[in-house]
Amino acid sequence: MSAQMAQVDVEVENEENAGLACQSIMSFEQRGFTKGDLNKLKEAGFHTVESIAYATRKELINVKGISEQKAEKLQNESYKLCAMGFTTGSEMHARRSEMVQIRTGSQALDQLLGGGVETGSITELFGEYRTGKSQICHSLAVICQLPIDMGGAEGKCMWIDTENTFRPERIVACAQRFGMDPSHVLDNVAIARCYNSEHQFHLVTAAAAMMSESRYALLIVDSATGLFRADYNGRGELANRQMALGRFMRQLMKLADQFGIAVVITNQVVASVDGGAMYQADSKKPIGGHIVAHASTTRLGLRKGKGENRVCKVHQSPNLGEGEATFSITGAGIDDAKD
Image 1 (cartoon, rainbow, N blue to C red):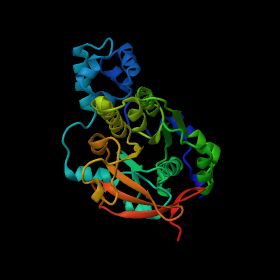
Image 2: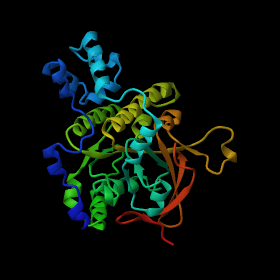
Image 3: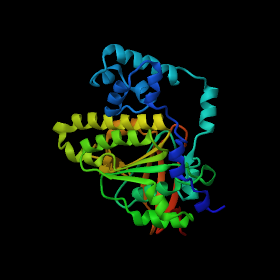
């Protein structure tokens, strides 16, 4: 069966409301809550039972019309519907054995990642200009739509573009490489151009609403840190920038947990100014400091190789050992390295 024939039909999937891992907040109607209250919660960005379970009581009370008593009841009911308690290591192992991974287009890079990019977690790509960050994202945006047995995740892609890096031509070329219908693939990529850090927060809230209605497999933020760096200038605003960036990263973590999507963010690097920088082979470090580092499950550093080749190194992962893989940037996406 060709990839084009096997490609998930997202339109039919939407009509049948299939493939959604989350529970709609409207299910609370059967538990004594009015439609009016639930609509208010949706307007505030709470679209699923999981989003209620992950919220603090303070966040719920801040919603107009939600009293402290209602907030407490919402939390209690959401805890009953979601697995918020302890589990065994065996159960966790069984869940991870069923985890979907999205292939990148390069076998060497997939092998480095243990099969591909994990769903349900955040993967950070950092590196200098022209090291392949956005090119990997374009490949993932296409491959995530393939069936699971072909290395995909059978879902749409959502892309928050803060640096004007999205190019539909790259999507078309990559789709043709895998025998997919380019127009169908493009229709399954939701793209939003982002202009400031506040807009970035707004788009993530809008993303949650869209994900509650349709099956998405991948959220790309290219880049996650650039607008925060631009909006908060100088050392005097560093603390505020880190606090805002921390809130944004927590939003991404919640989306990954609620909807089981893969979140891929790109990040820029800056020259290190500490005293030991001169003794390091590579003194550049990713923006965001410990805030981004702790929120990212897997951190991948990219650097230039020979010609169109690029080198990816695992800098942080709870399950992958440190290692490197070389891949190539082609006109049809990411591929194995050229000799």
